[in-house]
Length: 266
Image (cartoon, rainbow, N blue to C red; front, top):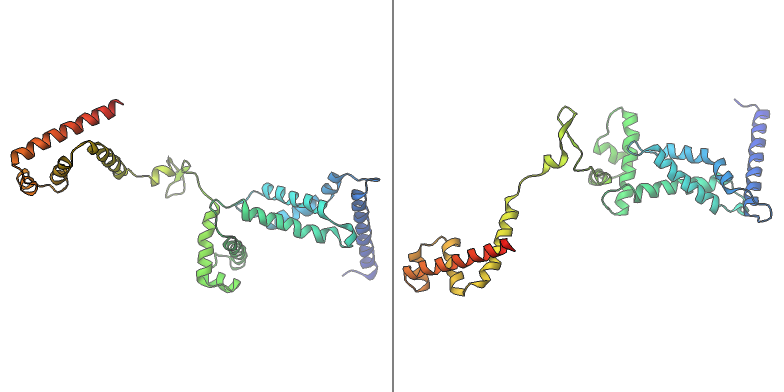
């Protein structure tokens, strides 16, 4: 327990430090007796490092968050008003923390989600980490909701949105059931052959080619190949003989083949 003499000595040291900081910031604004701005920034780097360590997440490199904290520190040095009489740290801490939170909000999401959902996701993430350390296991949705006074639906929505913070490359090695990486990529595990695309292209090409046929030829082709009618049934439907149906089919198919050959040659 500190004695009154020790406590007084510490208060005197703090006051001396505050006076020194005030003098340095006054010189920073004084064109007649300027102080190096970089020197002031370096003086408070331990504060930025401490806040970066407090707010870093396991999925983010510490060096990235420390750089963001340094940006906030520079903004704090530039924006601090020494005439207000408060300590620099009381102004710098919320400035640096705000810069870190903006980084998490604006730069770390692979998919855009509403801002209120981003903030909810950050709250749920912090609470999940704290509860996991306290309980020595992952918390349940109900426990997270009770901790944050949220409904189960809100917690689930935040957990689902959290997946949008990171995207994986489709060319990354695909994990195997035993946790190792396989020779295949993620793309190869989720991609499938879709014959429907080729059919759609052929139908579009055929529709373009049939524009050169007469309406009767298109109708006969439609009845033969779409409805699978016989030539006799087509003749009865159109009002011509079976022989005429056969001749129309041969002529239409011949013209379509010529159009297809021309398209391939082009």
